[in-house]
Image (tube, rainbow, N blue to C red; front, side, top):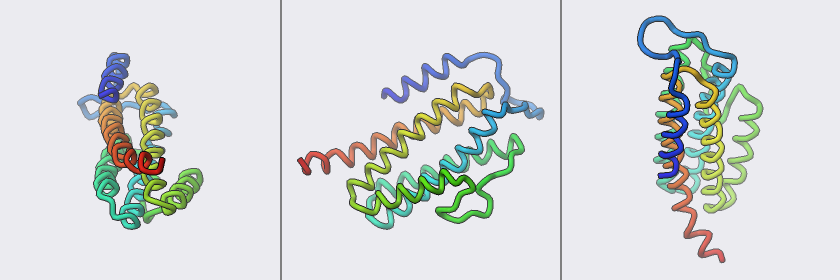
Length: 178
């Protein structure tokens, strides 16, 4: 619920002139908007890749369900890249392969941690969603485009739900370890 309230407050703060509405004219993006979209495309790919690896390893439905959701997020950001005529940084790249060396390194770290135990894997899920939430909030604050705001708001709501799913699944493991 807190996530939905936060998204509502952010959206209310950002009402005003912004492109991305109807019409055939595509507004120009700022460098920050462009860079964030490209980054979000790779970040959504990385999250889905991590969750699929961990789903295969631990056979937990939470990972496979959220991996499917990340695929939809990836597609949503992809539609924005198409709309704004940005080159997709993920074209031709298989699972676990990224243009960004930082995302590649993060993927490797997350997989290494997630392969240790079920608890570690769930902690990876929590960490990914917390970072995704921070990145989406930053994206919402830096864009003027209504279509980008809408997509980021939807992704933010989903990330709060994913975070809750991982935390709910993780909690009994933490309690039993005490």
